[in-house]
Image (tube, rainbow, N blue to C red; front, side, top):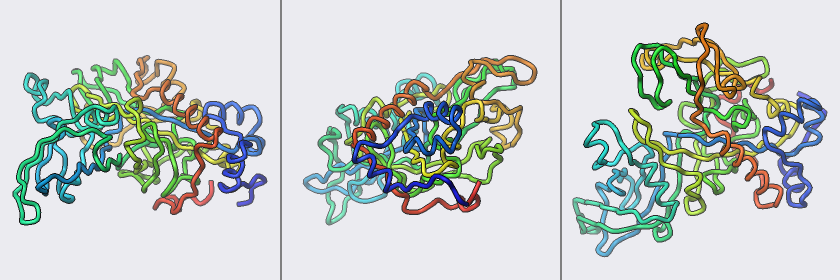
Length: 394
């Protein structure tokens, strides 16, 4: 397909190095496209920055806690009472964000409820706090030690990599509850008879809404992750491109996801926050932002999609979702969701965001400043994701 405006990432990076790149946030791009059209916007703008901050359950960290004397081959490991997976190597472990503390005092009073989990351990580490490690082993000739207890900090351990299998969902359901009882879900508390509607995407600020076919995002894409610099490793788990879309290309249901990683020693507890969701368990709220290089007018048009042009489905989490029933009770725009009420089943329903728009906006602004100051260059994707070939052109 021929475009009147054609740029490359290398050309944009040269402009960034010279301090000449025009960088705007996703919200600013919406206004530019609306006022000038995508062709003029593509000529004016080089990079659009995005942001999202919300619970992202499929998150965790690879940690090497250092060799002891005598050496140990860890078989079972706990960090602040939270089990970590040790079946990797001697002192390599993986701690998942949703893994609960085995001795959580809340669970002792209310079985199934947890105040502290893997996400909280990650937050404590990046906050510089001391974490208590316990490891057991069966002992070998080369790793004779069978028990280890010690205090660790992020500064002292040799290696800590945030590695999240599924982040930055491209759109997500709006959840309601059509039963007669309150239910407790990963989408928060849902009151009976559709008394509230919860949603979990930052709309026009959301990274993958701004490049719905992932024209510019792939393996190796450099991103804002947890307050530091991270990278896209691969398509995230549950990534799905075969979804219904609007005429302008935006997905109407949950679609693409990203597998991402980054050095935890660069990160901040402001952008990695352990959360406890009543009736569901523990998770980790992650701050993530992706820069979108405006290579042509098609990408400019995508990046200019507004909350009024982005939609999601309303799903019943009492009956349909648990049973795998794919039924929608209507389509609502993110403009409606952000207004505070939506109209579903002939009634006005108050809406509740699980994503922080304030923090998403701050991520986009931070990433914008990093690029304008020459601290952050764009990276050329080294490989596309399987499925993107379904949509070579709009």
